Image (cartoon, helix red, strand yellow):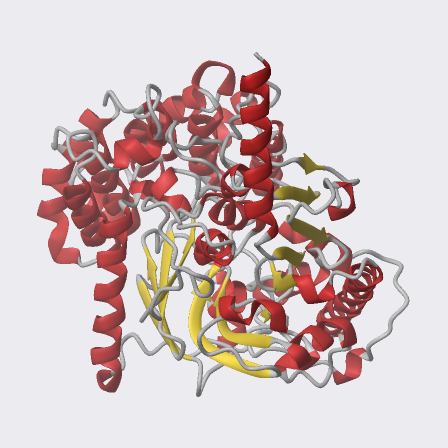
Length: 618
């Protein structure tokens, strides 16, 4: 027994000694802010502490958050896998990784690191086992064992969307001097929100300065690699939640002290900049590489520094799924200059009503001015239906308001990025083509990732093909949609019904018999879309049955939150056509068991909006 204890002691000592030969790593993150910082050339910004990191480190000019909203963005980081591959792209959906996949802090801990998170998690993936040594408001590198290397995350929330609209507020930056993007109306409300956003970035910068002071007081500056990044674009509408460059571009700054220069990016220069395309998808692999740990093969990112640094990538990718209570599917591909966007649900407007977003004064005044016909064409785009594809040149159009998708001179670059996006979806096995309910039902005995990587369970090639046909809106493809409605795969039938819905009255009339059959489909999601087609665009005599199906599936106590949200989104499109079921809508339950408490506001939000709109029509 004594010999075994001695051996264990020696093994622990060996691991500890190996760990001491690795750098400390500090990640500083801030919420809801893009590269509106002095070190990125923004003269309006006041950010001396973050600028000081850049002055002795290097900034990334083409860093993307991969997702334009917090929970999917953090999910990307914690797993090192694109959320469309793990079924976790939807805002605050809860899925799981395969049993043999570890979140990156667990891998770091096995290598001897003390791993802390202060303190926000907000992942769309279930944590299994011990992920962090400590994840709380008290987490700190100071709590580690003597000599133990640390990896510490400090997340600052003062710049969050909710803070830029808090009133009363004492202004620091002059609203008269703020730059108003071309897509926003130039009003006092918009200027105050933008100025207050900059104020909150300055407050956040002060907090970062306090943390850097602690690092210096502890004598750890020369032993610690520091990485700072924002968690997605600004909290202003059309930045946060939208996979434009305005929603995906983030500041990312790395400082590598002289002691660890061997781990620095190959292009590293003090006070320098890098044009390498990097993203949140790369952070887990980069962290492990910086700690001289080889990233596991299943991670989909690419290390941009450390022992296992990889070559530069040609493209960066982003995505949008359900945002709070509103469904959407968007995928984005960029090469640093051009941004290509593929809208798989172009019948939905950009600015779908999201209750949380409408708390921002800019959102409200923007929509009011659109309704009153007081906006320019560029400002009106947000409140209109989307084209199925978009292309923007950031060099000539940094606000992304001139869509070049139909420009003859830009067809080559559009097709290049379009092909890259299609191939990326195939490579990562994008399960976002499944209706949200099926992401969970198909993977009940495994995980969405495993389902997506099994062609027998998920025929991605066929499903992707019909989703592309559906969203391209070609009126000559109705026969393909009919064939899709008759396919044996429920996801293919879902996109067949979606394609009919996108095209409206003529397509519904042309496919009426198949839609009537789809009302009894074994897939609830297909039934809901078929019912929406008939209730919204079909004959009046068929409307009652279709509405009754939408009412039936809006009951989350019987069908779960994902089906209930899909049905309520359909009901919300009915307007005066749903007057006949007003009492049934008033009886829709909003308090029932959920897979996560973070979903609790979505059904009440939908019900409140539907009833408010219906009462306006009476």
